[in-house]
Image (cartoon, rainbow, N blue to C red; front, top):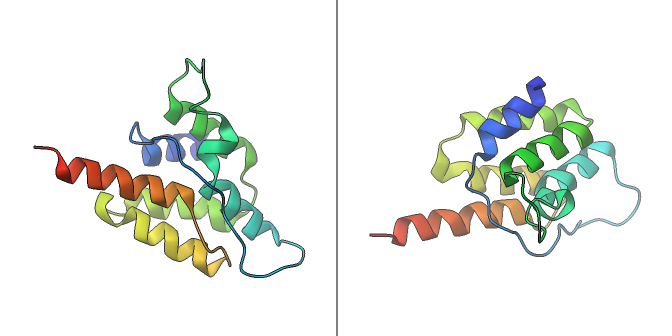
Length: 124
C-alpha cells in the first residue's frame, strides 16, 4: 500500500456513508489542479463508486485507492495528512474550510462526516 493510500485509509476508516450532490465552484473558468484535486476529495464517495450497488470491497479501501490514483497536487495530498491528525469531531469543519479556500461552495464528504457524527451523537 502506498503512503497516500495508507493515509487515506487511516483517514477514511469505515465511517463513510454515501454522499449526495457535488462540489460547486464559486468562480467560473479553468480549474487549477489544486481545485480539481479538492473537488475529487470532496466528491470521492460518488466518483469512486465505493457505495455502488454490488460493490463488495470495503468502501474505505475503494475510496483510499481512488484517492491514491487520482490526487496529483502535493497540497491536497498533504491535506490528507492534516485530516488524519485532526480530531474526529473537527474533520468536517476543517475539510469545509479547505474546500472553501479552494473556491468550492460545498463538500459532500464533509457533509457525510457531519451526518455520521450527528448519528453517533444521537445513539444511546
